Amino acid sequence: MGDFLEKSMLARLKDSSGMALLLTVFAVSFLTVVTLRLVTSVRMEIRSAADMAETVRLDSLLYSGLNYALAVVQRRDWTVSGSLEYTPSFFSGDTCHLVIADVLGKIQVNALLDKNGNVKQVQKNIWRRFLEPFDIDSIRAATIVGAIRTKIRQEGGIGDIGSLADIEGLNGIMERIAPYLTIYRDPDNRDIINIIEAEPPVLRVLGDGITEEAIREIDAFRRDRNNADDLADTNWCLAILAGYGVAVDQGLTMTTTPDKIVAVRITAPAPDQSGVVDGNGLIHEKIFTRRAKAVIEQKINGPSVLEWHLE
Image (tube, rainbow, N blue to C red):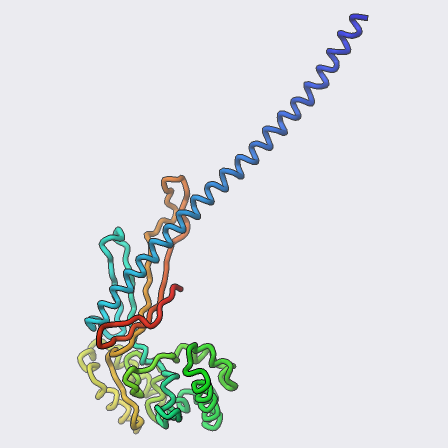
């Protein structure tokens, strides 16, 4: 009887040892998976924190670039279509890239009406010429101008260029014309176009009969660095247009220098850390770049920021 019990106990022990081994393997596997997931989560949290820190640093660099742009605008210390580099001493050599452009090189939607709320003839001519290449004849252009006038009167001004897409006739071409329009206008209420900043579709509005050849000649002249001294006034443009029998609209002012209101695009690139292992053992593959846009108006008491947003 004793031998039988002993053999029975030994058999049970052998059976339970197999189960214990299975449980041990399962436990080790489970803990391995949990540990790997925990390590991955921690690494992601560290990376996320590093990304956030880099974003905050670059946003600070953008704000520094904005303050530099304000100083530049106040001193009027930039060239036509100025492209500037700015390296703050407290950002470890990182550089801000600034591009300053005159807003008045675009068609100013809110300049459409006079002080009595009526459409100005010079603005009506501007819109007629501007819309013509988009297959909109003078009758439809007049209807569109009337709708813009109504919208300005009802809303107290156009606050967003995109809202013009609600107007019949513009909704189908809004994406094509939006880059040439601005909600800002000359603070002195002049009907004015900066012929250095204006894109070819905007140059067309200067007068009736402007051909593609005339626009190309104007564009080539202003891009030629040898003509830099001549760009101080508008005589060169008047001479080119006269050669094509074109007279600039009466009441329309041309300018060649940014004056009252400018747009500034700021880019803050971070050092390229692609493929570099940092102190946490993480490999950086992303190159950070932050961008912002500002609109600055030069007032009597100094420059003022009209618009600022991060892109």
